Length: 405
Ligand code: CTP
Image (cartoon, rainbow, N blue to C red; front, side):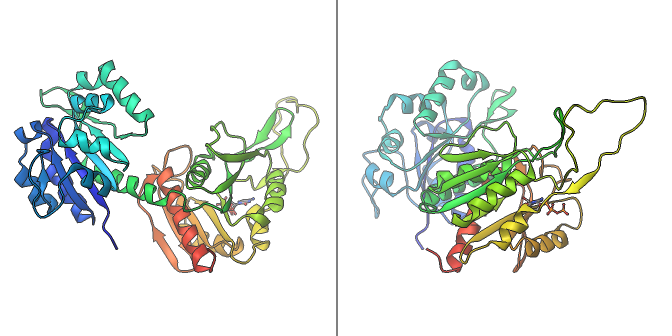
């Protein structure tokens, strides 16, 4: 298989001293890396260091004569799967906004159609200067990706924002950008049905029972599926999240409403991802008027069990359909998830221990285990958007294994 190609542009900030390590780590991650230095970057690192770390020739001068490979800027611009500028100075970002092409790096960036990921690193005041911020906003609007600098000790001894992020984070983000690009359009033609959020079970006209589900996981799945070209229907409980672009959203209130929507929609779906947290119980009766507190007595609320929506959808499963369930657990994660896998006739369950920091309700990250008939796979802490991509990759692979295009 062809290795992904990253062109690493290095500009003349003090953080350029980290560039050899970035190159080395990208090579180790299986990428082909070509480095381009600006003239000023050479005040901090040498061409020879970058060549040793990237295992490829490194270019500075546009008019340098080609050696055994094509150094001309168009060749590199075309070959790149990703253009990574790390570190990027304020000066370089300003030149990019203006479309200036006066050296090998600026010229090659202008000539590439590959995604460009810029990692600014500079003095805090320069970073926060409205001119730099305006330039970053203008480039972002044109589709250039940026990583936020971190807070840390800067070259002048002050602590502030402008520090280059951890190398691990830069490498991971670069690889993510490339896989996101590679996955674009891979779900075209597929109908994906996603559930998200809690349900609300009314007690009386002013009160209800609900749970802590934020809906963020399901919304991340719907957004990622739409971005990759699927026709997405998102059946959402009451949450205040914005509708992801290109998604058809249907709101429901109660678990019984959710059951109605899902049983009528599941037949035509190719992939069903059920990340909603439907309330398992509802009040046996709903008071028509507000329940009053009478005297100082307590109150007994009689509940009845709600239908298990995922189990009903599982019973209607069609040949070739892929069904994914979730499991919010606080103990015995894999045993409980395995029972849910069978009960809901799912292809896999995304289980998480909602008591762990960084997992579960109302946070942007998750720590999941994937439970299938093949066993349990523990995933590291990741953004819900990354987990969404991961879930869709796995669902698509299962669909293909079922012989579906
Ligand atoms: N689910 C469902 N209908 C319900 C409850 C859950 O469709 N009434 C779905 C969820 O969307 C999720 C999966 O079932 O995909 C597991 O949800 P979870 O709340 O973890 O488990 P329960 O089935 O409710 O089991 P328990 O409460 O006993 O853990």
